[in-house]
Image (cartoon, rainbow, N blue to C red; front, side, top):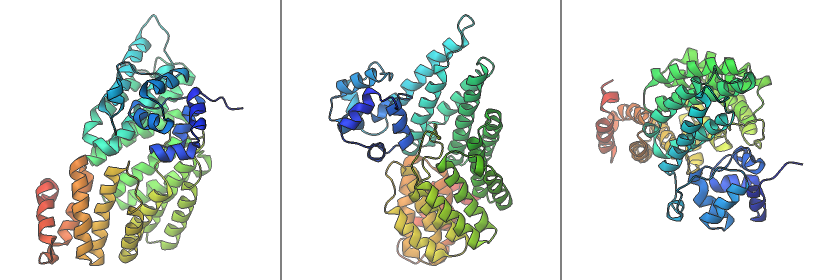
Length: 413
């Protein structure tokens, strides 16, 4: 029988299934599973919502977490716990615990502390959760610092722990690549992914190898290197039979759909999308300890279907797909909503629907400003360039001028 923590018991008493709680809090089911088993504890930015779900005070929640073996951060007042959204202090507090344990791990008189690996995992979870709301520029320095911290420990850990360190290092390097992409630093992003691939090989994890190759395919596609995008997507797919996580397999399949679309193979592209959609709807399990592709849900695959249809030249169908899926877009992926609205704008331009392009263009621009997403601005610049022919339409001229002001460097290119 699976051991259940005090937090797990409290959640059951409150009447929540793991799936229900994950949906309520906007986290992955695998994350909730780790709370139930005691492998991890909820990050501090989730405490206000969690206390509300359980119907307990902040102090009672801290007592439950303490009984569950979770680390309760000192100095968390009730007033602080009543806040909503991402708390920068919560992210930083995990970083402080990393620093303390790192100092212990480097002591020549004390053995390496394996608990440090779990602390790094917790910190990455916090940074990933904060990314979509705070924007990449707010987090990149912290993520880069953790890559250096992990690398310093490779030679100090025992063989078993070293394998996990390589996994965590690959995860942080891949995350740095993601942040660089969103900041418009595409060469930096590809460099980080190459580092992640090296460490993924060292870890021996087929899930990580497949995932990083999939991400490298996305990066190649982002800069218009279609040949590399297709080749890397097919390389990622070669690990399919060894990958344990259903969500990683779903992510690999959706990128294979993009590769097939770039090759003009509509039948193969749609087949890959159907497979990805099926896999994305399956429950996460403990085979995915890092929630590596937890974002790859049916909603995510559907928005990728819209992008694939656009590549295949089916612009009206793609526009309909975007309209259908963006109405149900999860709130916690705020920055990504802006990106997909920008891509909808480009589809509307290609479909010859200026009103739709203006509508989603302004919405995307607002989110891009909030989250400092240069990647979204870049998509909007591409759309604005195609809207010059419609300058006489209502709103078009204002949109083109707004994008020109916001993306001056991209516009010049």
